Image 1: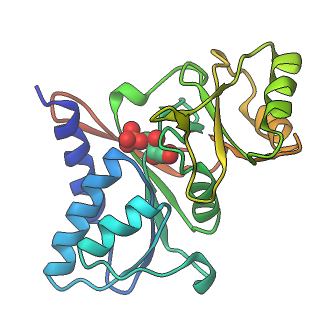
Image 2: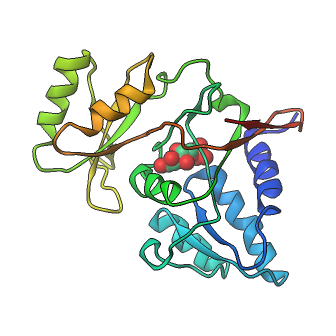
Amino acid sequence: MLTQEEIKQLVAKQAAQLVQNNMTIGIGSGSTIFWLIMELGKRVKGGLFFRAIPTSRKTAALAAQCNIPLAELNAVTNIDITIDGADEIDPQLQLIKGGGGALLQEKMVAAASRELLILADASKLVKQLGKFPLPLDVIPFGWKQVQRHIRETYHVEAILRMEDDQPFITDHGHYILDCPFQHIEHPDILTYDLNAIPGVADNGLFVNMADIALIGYPDGKMETRHR
Ligand SMILES: O=C[C@H](O)[C@H](O)[C@H](O)COP(=O)(O)O
């Protein structure tokens, strides 16, 4: 039986093979994407040329260490494919993302891409989204008003994400509120409503965005799911 890290490595290896010469790709964030970057680094060493739009400072730093040429989102008109991880994946390939706090850039890069490929081990598969607390990317100014709105509207206690006893700060200087909805019946409606709250920059629901998910299992099998 493979460990979770070995499964992540396996799906990352397979996904790295999809990148072709001269492509522009988006690279997501997180521990699964760490392995993707390692695999892409090997392909760069082997002579493959592509350029990548990173979705976080961490991803950018890792990719630079692996000699992957980087570009900014503003510098491209077209991204062939974005490869990213997820925190939850439902049967319609609707996602919760943002466990690492990079959801805002991830969604912007995914939205600019022709295709979004999600890599995950099978533990991320759920029947219904919501067990994983939904991250909201919020402007620090007046964040408690957003928290109060969530409490009054949904009866959900949003928790300010902390790191080393300080609020966790995103790459763009924002805060993250983690919202334990438990059951999200209509992700399409919820994403729209949450983003309408003043002070919310974005939320971690990725609705109708993922095209393909590559799922790895402990026995070494891989499954491709399409939306
Ligand atoms: O902000 C983080 C991203 O949305 C990640 O893609 C997500 O949290 C999954 O990360 P991991 O591959 O570490 O489980």
